[in-house]
Amino acid sequence: MILRILTVGDVVGRAGLSHLQATLHAQKKALGVDLCIVNGENASEIKGICASDAQDLLYAGADIITLGNHAYSAPDIGNFLDDRSDIIIRPANFPAQNPGCGYTVTEVQGIRVLCVNMLGTVNLAPLDNPFLTMERILQAQKGNYDIVVLDMHAEATSEKYAMARAFDGKISVIFGTHTHVPTADLQILPGGTGYVTDLGMTGPEGGIIGAKTEPVLRMLRDHMPARFSVADGKVRAHAVLFSVDTDTCRTTAAKQLIF
Ligand SMILES: [Fe+2]
Image (cartoon, rainbow, N blue to C red; front, side, top):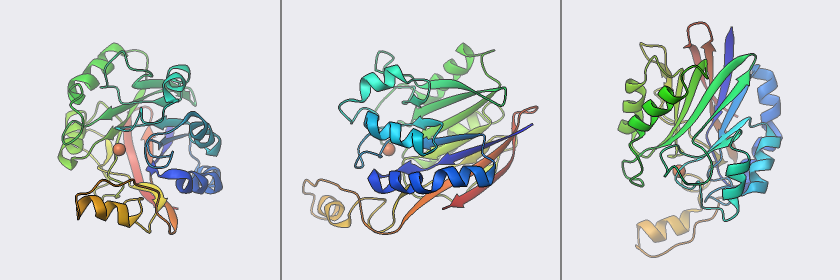
């Protein structure tokens, strides 16, 4: 059987969320999507996601929400991460005692899909080693899943690519998030892992990777403190649809989408 997994880039603010509310259900239906994974870590005005925005994202059509370096930025999110760890996951390499869980197993068409979220450590927080954390999860969950999907939320393209090489053939789909710019390297690796370095974002095109231009320039040009807010402009969702053969666990097709 072929499982069709739609992965959607980082949702930026209410603009990104509203766009998915207006489009995602129709896209899923048209594409025959079995499982939709959305990175939601910038959904609440760029930093983090609050519980009510997470609920809205689920109603909009996300089946699983992944997070990243802003996982804990929204003040009320800890309890929600604990209560709904079946559908919203934070990076697995945060300290183990932190709220929430770094992975979840969801059953789709009788197939158990282990979804994992990991944070890169190059130019980001010095969390646990993502490679060793991933190995530990696969070992601990052995027998509990049929296929694995990983959101590798990271700054460095090299670290994301290294993760793909390290787990080629062990993880069916690895998609990168965080940089908000879609990369042109969508591919199927020799072992069958479908991979893209970054999905891109679901947000407005008018500013700088989803944020208004002036505060970003104030920080980068003037080295002055700045408060970011969501940019204006046309909103698009950057996504990739992966088709996974559940008999071989290999990705057989992958297609980049903008809607
Ligand atoms: Fe991020």
